[in-house]
Length: 123
Length: 219
Picture 1 (cartoon, rainbow over the protein chains, first blue to last red):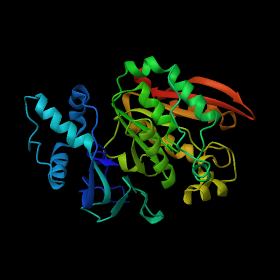
Picture 2: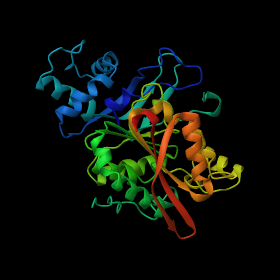
Picture 3: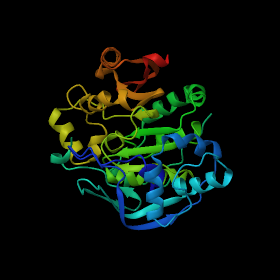
Picture 4: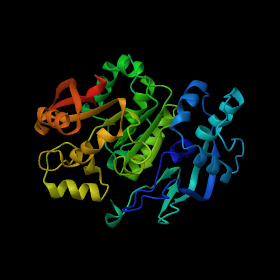
């Protein structure tokens, strides 16, 4: 599965593709929602590791508008619940991820992203 | 005692294309269990297994380190499917990615990974055999390691320093013929990573080691 927590950690790694190579843009996706155990401390602890704008933009693109454009100063339970859902419960099962810079397409099949590159694309 | 993951859903047909958990796998599980307290104390949030194969090791790790993100990569797409299904068989989500080493994560996870586990193809073979097996994402790629068995491992070793968080731990399986003390010396001198042997064991013809590396400043 490509969950948004993973998507937020993936960048295009084609040779010489080093600017505007994150986040990858989803295309033609099929989503699946799978419930995950809510752990507020884990979600709070993960906040500093996230690229917030990339996460919010991607979630909105997938139809989830529950996250604010800016990270709130006051972190309440509702915010953490929404963030939990976006990060851990939305699974992209089919579709692809495209690099906005080099246009490389990484296909997703049965929830597994194919991030392998051809010999000539490897840095 | 941490229970061994349930892999009863994997069949002989799966093992035609993915590595079946064997003595090296179980030594790695025993090593992680021996490190249980230290792992828990370091409160990891991001884990990575390179070459996750059946998914047995990462599934076991989730029983020790929880909650966290468990990223699993494998170049073999069938291994990716197996990893994912083993996670679900054991009621946990492993974030599986068909990728070489940690390449697509290197940019975002610079010095951010708290636990890295790698049971590499460590068996000495010809260079061509190892390269062919990797290029073709073949089962043999799970063990064929080139002349000193270090062909694949060495590619990843030079990346570890930049992936590992300050408190991070990197567990590596190795064979006696890989020259364990040379690996340890090289990792310290070239990359500033100190190490210890967590466990060693003879298993049939193989003498196996599990090493643990950390940034020197973390010790």
